Image 1 (cartoon, each protein chain N blue to C red):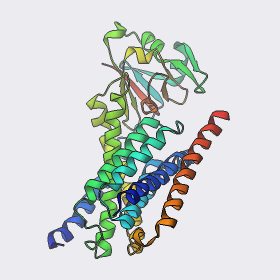
Image 2 (cartoon, one colour):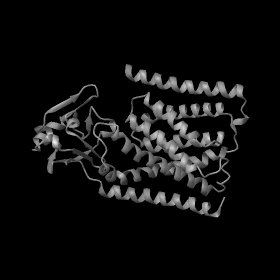
Image 3 (cartoon, each protein chain N blue to C red):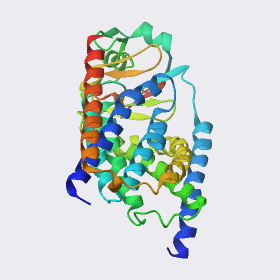
Image 4 (cartoon, rainbow over the protein chains, first blue to last red):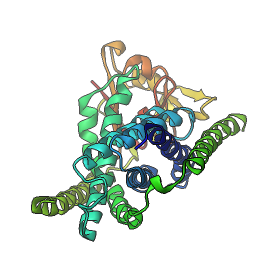
Length: 217
Length: 133
C-alpha cells in the first residue's frame, strides 16, 4: 500500500479514537458507567479492527494509539489525562502484539468462536495491560514515585475490571468482521484524501472547541 | 491455519474470562466499608477526623476537606519527613506519597484524597486507611 495513504489512514483513525476518548469517554464516566472498559472494549477495539480490516497493514494501530494519545493530551479534562494518554498508546501496542501472528485478511478466523475469542483476548489484554502500564508510568512521571506494593495490591481489582472489556470485545470483534470484505484500496484518491483530511480536521477542531468551552464555563 | 491455533485461541479466551470472573469474586469478598478510617494504626470516624484536623480548600479544583499533613501530625506521627504515606481505598487502590505531597493534599468528607501537585491517578476514593511507612 502507498505510504501516504497509510499515513493519512493512521491520522484519521487515530483522530477518531482521540475524539471518542476526549468527548465520549468523560461523558460515560460522568454518567457513572465504567468508562475504561467501554472505551477499550467498544471504541478502541472497533476503530483498531476497522483500520486493520480496511488497510490490512501491521503497525497501523500502534501509530493510531500515538495519535489518539497525543490528542488526549490536548484535552486536559475528565479523569487523569496523563494516565489516559499512556493507556491509549499502550492499547495500540498491545493490540499489535496480539494480532501480529494473525493473517491480515482474517482468513484465520473461520468460525464465530474464533472471532469471539479474539475479541475477548483483545478486549481483556488491551484493558488490563494498559491499566497496569499506566499504574507504573504515571507515578514515575510524578513527584511521588512508583511503589510496586501499590500495584500488586490493586492487581485483583484490575483483573476484575477487565472482565467487562473482555465481554464487550467479544461482541465488538465479530460485529466488525461482518464487513471484512471492504477494501480501502477501492476508494479513489480524489475521494479518499479530502475525506480523510476533513474528518481528521473536524476531530481536532471538535477537541479544541471542547477544551475552550470547558475553560470558558 | 494450524489446528493448534484453532484450539489455543478459545482456550486463552476462556482462561482470561475465568481470571476476570474469579478476580471479581475475590474483590467482592474483600470489599471493606469506609465508615471509619485507620490513620497510623488508629481508627477514626470521618466526623472525628473533621473535628481534630485543620480544614483545607482547593478553590480552583473545587474541593474542600481536611489537610492531610495536619491529620498526620494530629495522629501523632514523629519525624514527618522520614516517612512515606500510603493512602488505601476500600477497593484496594493504594498510592504512596511523600510528606511534601501530603502538605498539598486534603481528604474530603466523602473520603476522597486530592493532591494539587500530583496527577488525578493519585486521587483515592473511599479512603479506609492512611498507612505510615
